[in-house]
Length: 245
Image 1 (cartoon, rainbow, N blue to C red):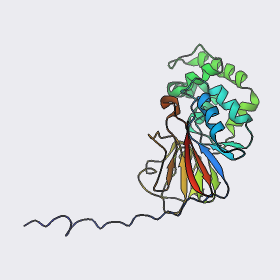
Image 2 (image 1 turned 180 degrees about the horizontal axis):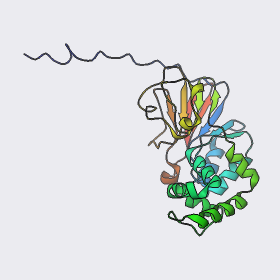
Image 3 (image 1 turned 90 degrees about the vertical axis):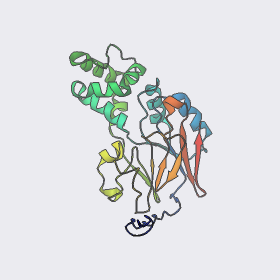
Image 4 (image 1 turned 90 degrees about the horizontal axis):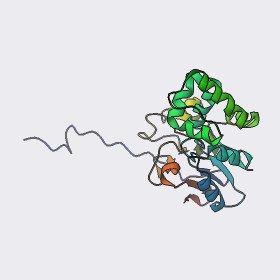
């Protein structure tokens, strides 16, 4: 008679990893992917506690219609830190080499960002001189200070046992040993394997139906450009509270 799989060759259950409560060094708010929705961003900022530091997890641009307004709003807002997302990375690549990197960015929402800066005359299949000319017009429309600002964004912010990045982290190596690309583009095991170093990783990039905390991950990208819902995680001595608009 065949033994039930509960016995015999069944795999030994693994203990679940332990996570200490979230404890940041200071109060702050982390805002998920904005993607050109200046209306939602302004509404959310007004709903957050006053005079508290704000960290944007990146992907301010593309897809939505008002990326230029979002960039200028965040750049000029005091007490605000912006991390680089993969969409900012694609935008920077376009500015550096439009013929090599242009089509990829345009296919992923870059056309809407160009339009928000008043740049037209290109499509997802454009190449050569059209892309170069669009880059030149975009650079002039942005201005050197804004181009420099977006080109020098950090890829991670820390507070206590909380790390804020755009896309995720490799759960197999210490946070300080990561390459920037992993924080910007993510890692295949990030959502599959819990961390074991006690860090809570706040991230966007991957859309979730509602903000969630699980296995060392705090996910706050609620798909603002498509759902009309932008989310922030508010960290204080009480722990974490989610605010959405």
